[in-house]
Length: 269
Ligand SMILES: C[S@@+](CC[C@H](N)C(=O)[O-])C[C@H]1O[C@@H](n2cnc3c(N)ncnc32)[C@H](O)[C@@H]1O
Image (spheres, rainbow, N blue to C red):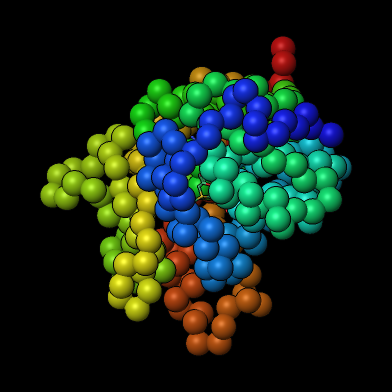
């Protein structure tokens, strides 16, 4: 069982109002606490994550879910038969929500993953919509280091990030739009992007993420000791696609948002 500390652990930071974490991320609580209700989760994201985790082989293993939010993927890891899973997030509100729906073998810990952390030693790590919250290359480097120091040699890391090959999504087509905060200029590394959840043409909620090119992710992963770095295609659970929506979900997958990244920590030499 992974070492578990309570939300009052020394490394923890207390966060104030809903929607605003204490260190400046404007994460809308409503945005994140409602993401598990988006159809893209059941139709694409979970089948994709499940597929690539099955390939890794996670039964009985010690897993960590980085930036677990309200624990949607922490619970998925538990359902898939890991021996134990630790969900880590900076938001106390989301962790409280997660704990209410907790299950066997699941523990949670509050920690800011943009600063160096000692989380324990795990056989597999996931980070679903995590790394693109880094506000600078230095923060991204720290987040990735936090992943590598938490893994045993040979362990795998599976991540979903805003697609660095085509980072923007115009409003209107899918359930989220992704637009640069500053328009009419070429996108540069670290730029702020607004992820906007729309319903019936109206903005519901939005959060800010940051753009990093694919080479930056790869460079920092290598620097942290990862190898076998691959960008993987999304997968659709056809059985869950409502009749008449086949084209919509084919388009969704073709646009490849988010991008899936998998890598392995080098074996000790
Ligand atoms: C879009 S949510 C994804 C939640 C979860 N992985 C899921 O897909 O259901 C992003 C999460 O990243 C967390 N987060 C962002 N920056 C973080 C940081 N520096 N340290 C820890 N958690 C962070 C937020 O609190 C939020 O829960």
